[in-house]
Image (cartoon, rainbow, N blue to C red; front, side, top):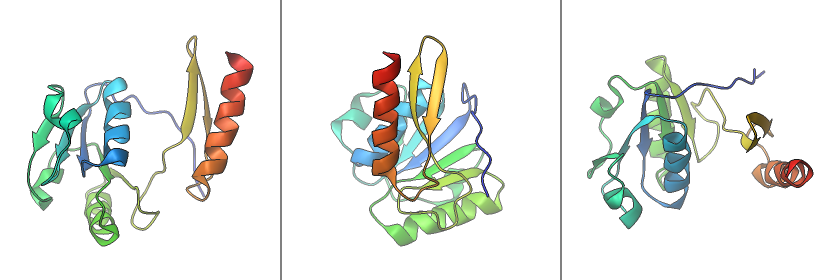
Length: 144
C-alpha cells in the first residue's frame, strides 16, 4: 500500500548516488525543489562538475555519505549497489528510492505537471513509467 504525499525539500539534505543520465534528471528535480544536494560517483559528467549548487564527491559510495541525509536516490548503474544503498538508508529512517526497482525502497517518484501553482501527479507504483509519462503528457496538454 502507498500513500501519496508532496514533500517540501527546501534546504533538506539529499544524496544522489551515481552521475549518469538518470542521476542528472533526479538531481535537477531535487535542485528545482530547493534541496541541498550531494552527488557521489567516481565518474561524473560536465553537468555535475559545472553546477556549483551540487556538493560533488568524486569516489565510490561510502556508508558515511548517508550521514544527515533526509532523502537518498540510488542511481548508479549497479542494481545490487542501488539496493544496498537504499537498504542502509531505510534502516536509518531516511526516504530512499532506487532507479533499479523497488527493492529496499520506501518511496517512488511520481511524474508530475506544474502550472500556475497547481500540481497533478501520476504514479504507476513503480510498475510502468512509460504509462505514467503518457498520462502526464495528456494532463499537460489539457491544462496548458
